[in-house]
Amino acid sequence: MAAELTPVEALVPAITLLGFGAAAALASKALRLSPIVGYLIAGILIGPSVLGLIEESSATHLMAELGVVFLLFDIGMHVSLRELNESRRDLLRLAPMHLFMTGLIAAAALAMIGVDWAIALAVGLSLGLSSTAVVARILTEREQNSCPIGRSATHVLIFQDIVAIFLMIFASSLGDSDVGAQGLAGLVSDYLLGGASVPLYAALGLSVVQTVIAFCAALLAGKYLINPVFRTLVATRNAEAFTAFTLLLVLAAACATAIIGLSLTLGAFLAGLAVSGTPFRHQVQTEMGPFRGLLLSFFFISVGLSIDVPALLSHLPLVLLSAAGILVMKTALGYVAARLNKWSVPGATQMAFLLAQGSEFTLVVLSLGAIVAGLSSGLMSSIVAAVALSLALAPTWAALGVRLSRKLAERSKTDIETAPSATSIADRPVIVIGMSSAGRLAIDALVDHHIPYIALEGDPDRFLAAVADGYKVSFGDATNMKLVEAVGGSNARAVVLGFARYEVSLEVTPTITRRFPDLQRFVAVDSRLDLERYLDIGVRAHLAGGQPKGIEMVADILLTLDVPEPEVREWMEEEAERFAIGNTSSAEEKIDVEEIIEEAA
Image (cartoon, rainbow, N blue to C red; front, top):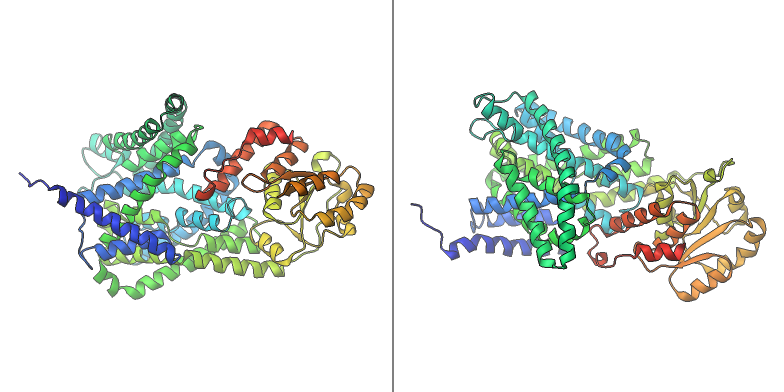
């Protein structure tokens, strides 16, 4: 009978992981590195190759796998049919091009150095993925979640997250007789083929079938099971019961799929997908956030534990070359993919640099048994280190892309865009003057509701930043009434003032009233004094109290332009959620949608 662990022996690994994990998180933040890199380094330090404080065991493997379980649950909650439908252009064109061009070239390179082509395909496609965690953090820090660059990058990441689920199923199905195929391929092998291996093409097809079944089952469960249960729990007003049931849902779904021969992670993804269609998704994300962050840190530390440091040092030139290759290749091919999808040169440049790093999912794929068995220790450690290095360089690389895109935008200054003569009210544009946060938000809303607009910006820095972020903007001084008339002021449905400059508005009001008597103007202000002053001169002013800034003004604009109230309400909720992604300071500051719409109406 095996000796039982004492309480101290059982707790030491957990204490070591927690202590070094916390230190890695603090050090990473201080050094402005991705926390993923810090956790990998912490794993290397405490592993057998350096300090030898901890060894890989069933306990560390379980905690690491639970981290991936909660990651997949979180990803599932961000996937909804409505979002998939709204982002179908990016999902069907830009995202597949970006992933498969980079992934297939990486797979070919691995196959050329002697890796089995099936393993090369799984690892190569995983190298084509970008880091959801890192990109989301960069977009949040730059307040780019709502701009065209941020939206399309998010759509690409959603597509990649879905493909990653399929990729994990496929990679798991590659197991030999010792590792064992999983999922439907494993069931077919065990019960129909008498234990014989499933052909690769059949395993691939079964993976597709499994993914489709998973989506359908999760959507039905969310509508007819999860939603009623959450409603009942909310009615009890018991926060502990809500948290407990959410944990039960994640772990029970993961366990259920594992029992029937599928993976823990697939069950967690299904649970997240089921929750995504309910009105309780945001509360669940809040409750599960700490668990996800803590357990996911254990996973990355465990990856560091598995790195063979002597083998890594002997392949150091390969690591550096691989990291540079990942960044340069993905940047070049990402630029091509964006340009083929009609992005401007500055926008395509920034997009390519933003999505050029490796992904945490590559590390997940590399930890699967079939992949471990198919790669040499040196190559495995080199790929892990190269991906980690690309993650560490991601913020700097993305910042380089921003600077380059703005230089390219400066060369692309064009003549002022003019509005075409419109035959119907719906074809008349809205003129947005000033690319402030409120001005950008107004453009986002107009684009979402297919309302034409013309944007003007007279400040060179703001103009370059807006063009680099993917907005269609013309450079010019909007205080010139001839310019306003030239771009279609007499034909415009409304004018949005991105900046509250009362003296300028007061000076031009008599001229605007005389030349464009039916033109409505909108502005977001920061004080009640400005609110009253703007209202006195006929401008529809709104006190900017919610987040994102200017959302009250934009709601009024949409309602004035005859957008149905339910659509405005839905848009406001989605925009508030997009603003709150990764922004913990605003998580508690929820806008009152009903109050804003009532005031606007």
